[in-house]
Image 1: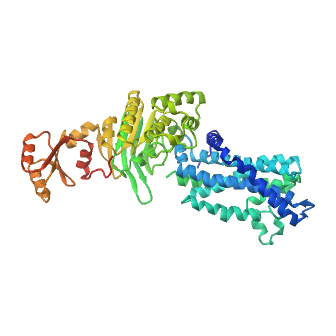
Image 2: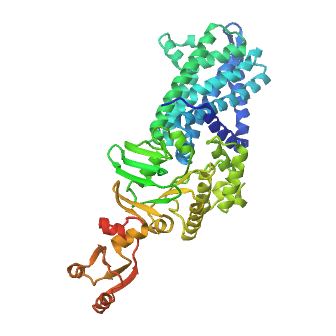
Length: 256
Length: 306
């Protein structure tokens, strides 16, 4: 493996942007409707029964930042699983790209930048809906945008690694049933991690969604401390680790 | 001037299969060079290695004085690659396919646009620039892929089975354009299992079988050398093939069994024709071609034809 070239990687990102801009209207409705439903149902519906906790925060306010992190995760995973699989296997876009000066390293970095951009798009949509509901407490919430980018950089290569290993598109369902959904419910989004049994707690902190949700909550509620810096550094380390893993696996899959 | 492509003792080993087994050849500047062989001969593996897409197991490939194994990016920058599989970007319309592709070469976009329009006109796609790729016919898609391969003004265009799956008209349109590129002096390397294609386009060919080169030279020379100019196809009555085969061999003729027919490589031997016809056999005269060369060399026909 070699280091990716950021200039080449940008060409991949621009390809995905162009393709997205041609087709975005088909998915635009869902981008806003879904957070509207989720925040409405969980925040206000479920919230009525939960009351306030963690220092007088009502449930809708507590849950919103985690949902932003969760959405960033899901959208990066969808793009890295089904989106990338179709590009790789069905439309052979990766093959056509690798016949140009582009190397696998550039391809994976470009893909990651795009996956992170998808995470940002959805985070902004949820943030707008949440602001409309009055659930955003601090101007620091603007930092949700770069944080969602980082969250995308962590999760996209996880899905891309699964894509590189996947014998068929159906096997990618495991990314969601075995990984994403359990993480979504365990990573301190719907209830504090401290509410879990003691022996599970350290495991949960290793899951990438836990630091992601923790960071988002600090930003949206406007309470930052060193733990949020630690969460950020953990996410950076994970992005690098999974990026290298995805590159290795993609090279094995594509260069035979 | 060095040959623009130098392949030396190239081997490609997969887990259980040796796809390319120690081949060497050179391609000269401006030449149209063909790699001919049946499916599974090792053509695509060879093409993938010399276009820096796939690594060689051993051996050396030099393209325009660049080592393909060490400088893949620089090699790919001067190549135009036409893959066997259709891999146009279906998310993008025709012109944008070329422009997005040009960015992978980090080309200036005004130059890319001019090249793209020229290439699309050259391939008679100038009136389809905003159409979706799915709406194009098979022949148009093929021409678009070749146009895409020209976007970076390559020194060498490398085509893997460029007309497989096309109808005769579509195939001839592609050939006519490739001959025009050859006239313009672009070095062309193509793999094919279509004899007619190799004869029509290539100045020199290698014939591959089982990962090895079994013959090399100009198509007409190879045909002359191995098959002569004319072939007599004889279809003996049922049950007499072996006996007639032996008779013909005893007379010192070059004979090849091909299914239920015997191919006799004799240059316009009228006495022979008369004799065979009067013996109640179906006899057909035709011009010798590269398939006869392959048959002579391996005793087998090409398993797949089109």
